[in-house]
Image (tube, rainbow, N blue to C red; front, side, top):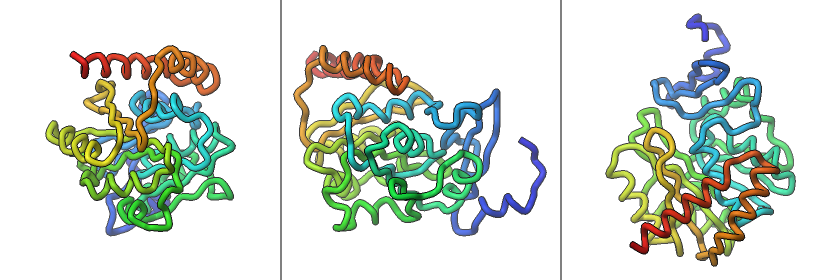
Length: 259
């Protein structure tokens, strides 16, 4: 990407929030918050696909829930999950919650995030305020949580209060997936906070630069791996996501817990 500045750049540098910037490499556009840390990515010739493997894994809830009515994304990133759910789940409403107006603006301009309509709503607000709002209780079938600041040392919200709010936002059989990344201590902090709140919490081995994806269930499911592998095949065919690897990861995790 050219280093030359132009007037349009100001849209992504509103004061009071980290600036949103992009780099491009081998056909992939990367989102940054004024630092070298990658906050999201989009393959330019496949703008609606999910480029990063750990972000694909955030769709792991599809193994257990195939027709959500409302999907909520906390932390917009490069809008990969928001776009994917909006395009590929026509029966679902999609809400994205993002505090940084620079991120929203750059996603609209350079990451092909569509405008709001009757199914898509992007809200500029703090994710903690969203999950603690009584109006949002029991309204989301799926929560996808990926909340990082420009330093990316760990999730910016990691307390039991936050995860209780996430739990409260979910419907009775709701599922949360979240990306845990950063300093090693963050893993235990986040997992323990989730386990205080959710009925079942499972995490998969890291797949990319120490990102660990966690799936948390408001109500623990009955797991039949033959059924999950069958669903994974359907997800691969319909969504082109590597879902069989998710099932294998879940199976390995359960075996490790039993040893």
